Each structure stands twice: as structure tokens, then as C-alpha cells.
Image 1 (tube, rainbow, N blue to C red):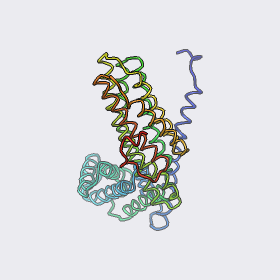
Image 2 (image 1 turned 90 degrees about the vertical axis):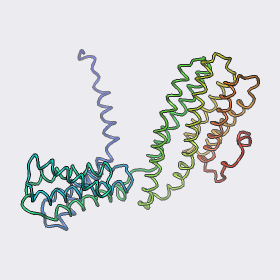
Image 3 (image 1 turned 180 degrees about the horizontal axis):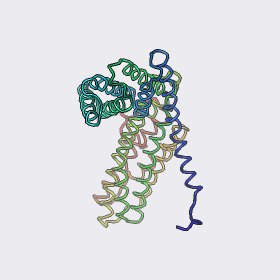
Image 4 (image 1 turned 90 degrees about the horizontal axis):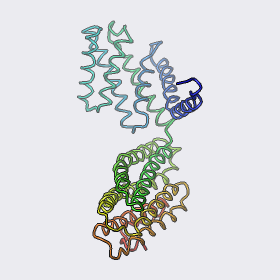
Length: 367
């Protein structure tokens, strides 16, 4: 490629964005390593407590964004690895083969106490670090390394949960917006497929709707992590009402994703049948798409939930009187109304309504 065609500035801009996006966890990890080092110096006789910093870096790096219970497991894995290696190295010494034995024993011990994959892996890593980075380990057992690991693990939990916790609302909001965006794109593709009679577009919409299941799970996990962050961090508790809105809405979003997936499957069948497409169908699907976009903005501007509700009702009204539609098209109309009900209830939750609409009959919801 000629030199004149290189574009270093966009590459630098991308690099800056990547650095900015990871700056917070990097600073957290650096702070945890420093705090663990000086805290270990204060309470232990070792003038170079490297394992305190190592434990803090490993535990915090692997547990960033995880729930507190997972972070505790990861810290425990570090302690187990160091303890097993420190004890057994007195018998078999150090070396390449010994490292394999250390890893085997550390992972077995971690599994024996009920650890998951991350805990087991961290135990193995910690065992290797002890044998390779601390040659004095073969001079005799020292409880200092275990205490250093405990200090480092405790510091990592404090840094992650109390002093520099992740922004719970930001994480949940990003996860929710991913679901909203994917759902709106799927509904828009369904509407265009009806307009053009394009089965390929309907299949694309079906694929996009199927891919949303993982994003819905990520949203649920983000809400769980955010609730734990708020519980551990008193200054975050005023955000609880906002997170409750997300939590109430996520259930309806899950239903909307499932029903949209069924709608896309019916759309593929309807377009492939070459039967006449009722003119109300593209408009109804676009009303559902508009409802999603308004719903996405309702958490920052609750008044938009009313607009989202109106679009859902409009979609339901367009699908209410299919006339002489074919059986396949009748299925599509019925599924449009199902999605409309999901979005109508989601709009109520996003708007902060305290009146549950789950027991209200469908016909009343779409009036």
C-alpha cells in the first residue's frame, strides 16, 4: 500500500477510544496493587510483599464487572494456589515438572472446595507465580505469602465494591440499549420485508431476533450486578428507583424479543406463501419499531413512555381487523398484537407507573 494512502489519524483515534474505554478498570487495578503493597508492608514483616500486589491484580482484573460472590471466589483461588504451592514445594522442590504437579494439586484443591472454572484457573496461575517468582519458597514454609494473598484479595474487593465501583446505571443502560436497538432493527426489517415481499429480509429479521437472547441475558446480569453494587455502596442507593424501572421493564422486553422472533418466523412464512400482504402489516410493524425507539429514550425522559405506549396501541389497532386475510396472514396479525401488548406493558414500566398492567385484558391494553 503506498504511504500516501495510510491514514494514521483514524487509527490513533481508535486507539484513544480503546484506552478511554478501559481506563477506569486499569486505574482501579493499579490503585489496588499499590494499596495492597503498602498495607502488607504495614502489617507483615516482609519488606517486598509482591504477592499482595499480585493477588490484588489477579483478583481485580478477573472479577471486574462480576458479582461480589464471584470476586470472593477468585480471591479464594489465589489464596488456595499460593497455599498449596507453598506447602508442597517443600517436599518436591522447584522445576519444570514440579510446576506441573503444583498446577495439578492447586486445581484439584480448588475444585474440591467447590470452585468454578475461574477459581480453579486462578489457583493454578497463583501456584505457578509462587514457584517461578519466589525462589525462596523452597527455603521453608512461610505464612506471609498466604497473608499477602488475603490482603491483596481483600483490597481488590474493597476497591471494586466500595472506593471505585463501576457505574451501575451506565452498565445497565448500555445493556438495555443494545436490546432496544436490536429489537427495533428486527421490527424495521420485518416491516420492509412486508413492503417489498422480500423473504430474505424477513429471514434477516428472524436471525437478528434470535441473536437477542444473549443480550437479554446480559441485561439481566447487569441489573443483578448493579443491585449488588448499590447494596455495597451507600452513595449509590438513590439510583435504586431507576434500576427498579429497568428491572420491571426487562421482563417485558424478554417477552417482546420472544414474540418478535415468532413474528419474524410468521413473516418469513407469509412472504414465501406469495399470498397478498395486507397493507396494514407494514404500517403495524413500523409502529412497533417506533414504540421501541421511544421506549429506549423513556429511561432518561419518562414522558416518552407515553409516546411509546401510543405507538404500541396504534400497532394493535392496525392488526385488530384483518378482514379477509389468509390464515397465514391472520397468524401475523395475532402476533403483531402480542408484541404490541408486550411493548404497552414495557412502556408502563419504563415510565415508572406503579399500577401493574399484567392482569389487564389484552383488549383493554390496546384501546
